[in-house]
Length: 225
Image 1 (cartoon, helix red, strand yellow):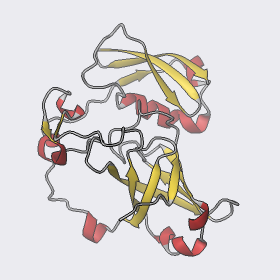
Image 2 (cartoon, helix red, strand yellow; image 1 turned 180 degrees about the vertical axis):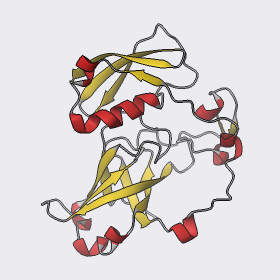
Image 3 (cartoon, helix red, strand yellow; image 1 turned 135 degrees about the vertical axis):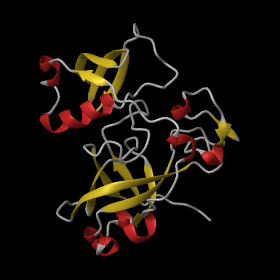
Image 4 (cartoon, helix red, strand yellow; image 1 turned 90 degrees about the vertical axis):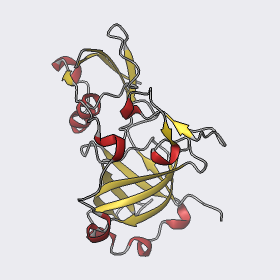
């Protein structure tokens, strides 16, 4: 079977660093799904506006072809403990396919390159190829009794973000909440904990630099790229 992209995503993340570790963690994050010309048919999305959430099947396009491992070190376990690749959501898989659940904000038929899907909570790098889109069905897809394996053992710890007003003012108002939430979710690899290190993250055409000490993240600079 040959998989062909039907669309690409337009998101604030030009690179992997800073991308949320799972979809839906940061609902304030806005992105758009742009269909390739041959799939830009209003008929193809007829009825989609009635659903609140979507499943996206996509490609880990920044993983080198053929690079996979039978065991991986999930960030949730601090990057120190190995589990089987099929017990994880690692991108280093035999078939580098990702699965994300996102909220559907709107279906835009007015654009010349439309229809365009406006979504919330995506965990995809800008330009990621999308192979398929399916509606999320609460009656079938929601399992309140489900258990999360090793992910239940340790919850994510949010950081307190210190964002000086003069630096926050450099961020477009419509992106301020999303950027602050991304920083609060701690974009660093879990094995890095150097309070002297200045980290840099690209977001929405900006370069954001920050430090982390204990559980506090302080933004050092915001520059347009």
